[in-house]
Image 1 (cartoon, rainbow, N blue to C red):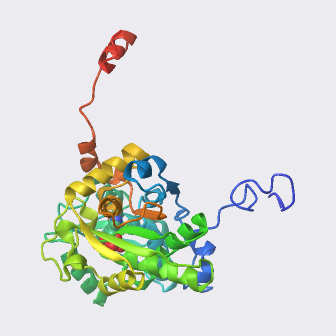
Image 2: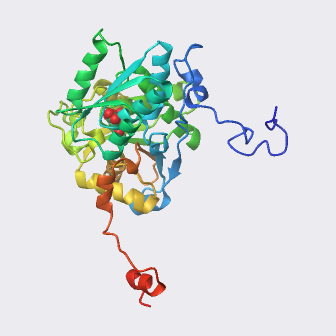
Image 3: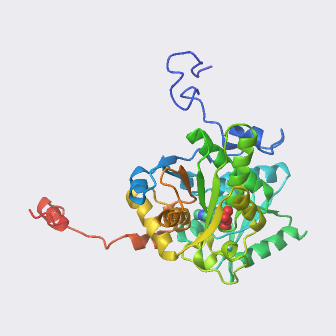
Length: 375
Ligand code: AN7
């Protein structure tokens, strides 16, 4: 043994009581007791999970929500929460002998499938709505060698097609969208982490809603943690959709969903009933936020909290801010907003946060002058 033994000086450094030089447990191992793993399930990992929960003190103070916390899922290996579900879905696909996986995607699922598929040596096929994928996400899928097809239609059309692809017999292929139950099983681990970091459940768990898998997965996770006696109370689930893509708020599918937050540009969510159950069982809500509200939250969270998330992620923050302003959120509530994806995914929208670049000669007077500090 080269590692530090418990009781040796220094053994308590690092994460918890782990020896400081021990490998961190992989997500599937860490929550094995709560996941549908068998002895035959390969433990694949790209280092997903264990993402930061950040107390956003300055942003929370500005918004009158001092106990505002951000679960930054952009810190996963491909930059979104999808990795938690994909690691589980790919592990099960491998266990079942699959050679190919397929998904429809607004971008992040395809980036994740491409990465985990590449690491596992699987063929990866992704079907995307043409022209509506943030540049970084498309490049991630292409860089990892996925077969990328863009269809003239939206995400809902793409999902219909991949469901059909997964059912034909010519070329067996495993569907890894969140209609694959292993996806939500993996994604529920984020709720475990939130509870572990807070040593309780939050009062409010706020989350963007697109295909409605993640809100369903968090609720599964909180209930499982509660049933295991690890938390005494459950949170209220607050889901937020973009106004132009808000089927769960309207109560019917939206044929032509529109929002600049392309990740949640979805008109007919696959996990509709599960999301409604999460809302109702938790005493929560699913409401809509406007484009400007999403953009303002997207800007403020990086300017006041230093966390750069993608536009869709900011829907959770926009919703919480809106309800606080409306007097529907107590100032002392412990709130966790899930920031589902990284800001670097969408450089085109990020460009709207940037002023034209100022240039200067490499001299002190020129730089002082350019800063307006008059030499
Ligand atoms: C950053 O990648 O649907 O309600 O195909 O990428 O579980 O769908 C992405 C969804 C929120 C919504 N935030 O989650 C896909 C896809 C980000 C996302 C959502 C997505 P769900």
